[in-house]
Length: 334
Image: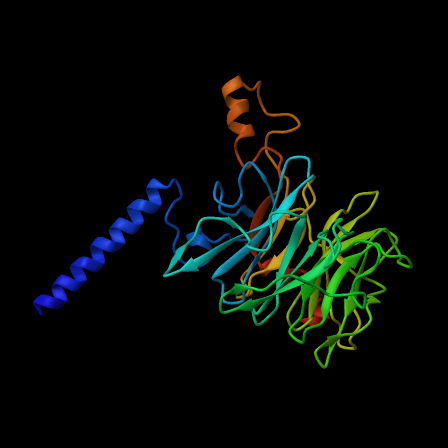
């Protein structure tokens, strides 16, 4: 009994020391699912302010299938450099953000986990093996090993082209969805698919009507069972931002639906991602309550505070209940 009491006492002390050291490092102790953040309701809220959503440009956040790992894209102000950053929950506590071990040199972005969590897809302009100059954007993948992530592998010309191939997303059966501005598309960027057959990707094909139009379609999120797809659509008139299309009973796609003003404010939503537990929709937005015209004459101190906050007009991550998806589903598919 005495030894057990001593052991418990030592454990408590070690935990306190760990928590104290973490606080002293300037990074808070974050526990539980979703970094311990209070879940949102039907109105989008900034996700993890001053932790993930900061005064820097942050975009395309994804969670691993077990919810214990986060990847997102971090950019500088003029978007001339961006890299992949991750956080991991170990022993119940989230680590500080770190640059992914395979990133930090080239333009890496748009991460997406396979459904089993053993692969991470992303786009990059890194050079092909044996070459020195950075390439146009291609889709790459890393494999999870016992020692960490593998060396990135280019998916090759069955998937990639001599133009920009970006925004990978993967379904339960391994089908790859992505965006490309390759020749022969309907708009400046279209969404393509490549089926995984016997462990190999088939020739990429344009997803076609009604997903792709003469406008720009990009950054797909595909439901694991492929029952719906969320993607960016940009056009010259009103209606920019996240759209959703549902798989109909005959296997075709429904007409895309604008996800509404809660998501697509005057600063269009982009890079949608649904959490593995299907509870929350995450997306990227540069919305802010101060610009272009605040409600009063700002003082110098107020301006400095705004510029150093997540609401300075930079890209950040928002989340909202997935009830918004169910509400948009056509009645005949409910």
